Length: 626
Image (cartoon, rainbow, N blue to C red; front, side):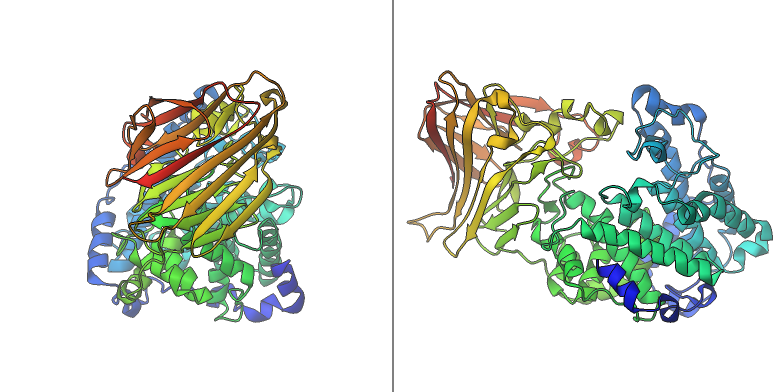
């Protein structure tokens, strides 16, 4: 227990100044530092802030809140909820940039609106404190007598704390009641519940945690570090935060692999960094936990899962294209002394001067780090071979660059955080562009986190690059898992294999189903690189059916003995041997607001049917550049 051990050997109070003297970033009144923000960034921020002068704060209705329970629609409430907070963030940034009080009235209006909300969280998380499972209870409206700290209640609390910290006396120049109202609401909704309770599931006292833990705690650190005047209470709160955060670290394997996927890394490993960086800055470097090996490995996961540009390995609820918080990633790399991580942040196209909306703890450091990041001259690394034994994910490149073939595949089990039934699946890229894909996940609804989750097509194994065996797909649950997982890599090739029998139900009728992935790097024109997917099976009975499903980004061109696959910039030819196959492709229309920006109006499923599969048999699929 890394953080618990640190607490046992250090005096937290001795490492930190009191809240009144704690300084993380310059306050609005400290004009010299604000004047150093690059002019281009000042202009961007002021233009954005000015767009919210005289803002009509959107109404949050009870009917919109109840719509999640009624129809499963969470966005009807979330859109105005988040719009309020984005407007307030930009108004605060604009006031800090300009420093003339021009935004003060609008800032106070935003604060007052938010303080009058019944619940600082969102409708999809309502009632989570009753059952330990987010969104499980059927409460139609918030229980104002029992405040619950969800992700966005904590985000709201941190936002208001940052405003008090940054604005100094500006709020009091409007009315002393503004800060007093913040204090009253913070005590009732956040501070007292956190200190008094240990049954919020994300604390980790009674169950395994996921990104909710560091995401919430990164905000609570802000609340208590900057906004708690009672030093004894402040110390107790920070000690509890570190104890809870240790439970997040305890769920990680030594390799730092994030089973929630790269899209969630920013809210998992990235939020862990937010926690530790705030303590590091507040203590003047006395609280430095970045030398811990696991914390370094959690950071390195991101570039090890990077493919090219904004494409990342996207198993679980991840999107294939991820807009990383570049400035945060850069600072994480700087803190652990890893230029590869810094290069990933600095070198992804169009990321210079990109602000991380949605959290002042991310927006503020962007203002003061962008210039350094833009001038560092570092570029993204392209790791040739990657292996995460804990989460059983591998990746391999033809070359240590974006050029050529890229393969990633996974083992694991079907009860991972944000799980899809995808044990044994893969993605395949050519020159940094997708060929075989993982579709990702669509817009979240009530169904996404319910017992109907696996009715969603993107969650099912038949819409991953996996077999359907005797009509059976994989099932959810920790018992449905990979077995006998093996990995090796050399200059010549990378190999990954696993037994899939246990990932399927007994009705699949298999004694063994072993899948092997192999990327051969080639040796020039006479021996080109290729990828093989080889399946070896033994059925329990005599009469069986077997189809191999491959999800593709572009329409496949099917021939009698092969298939041509297109990445948009290059092509791979798929051929096979070992058994007779028939191939057909199916169009899967996509009209989802989260999936369409990645895949356009649809994807294709290539279905390869093994004709009269033998009781013991094999098939080898080979992918070569055309």
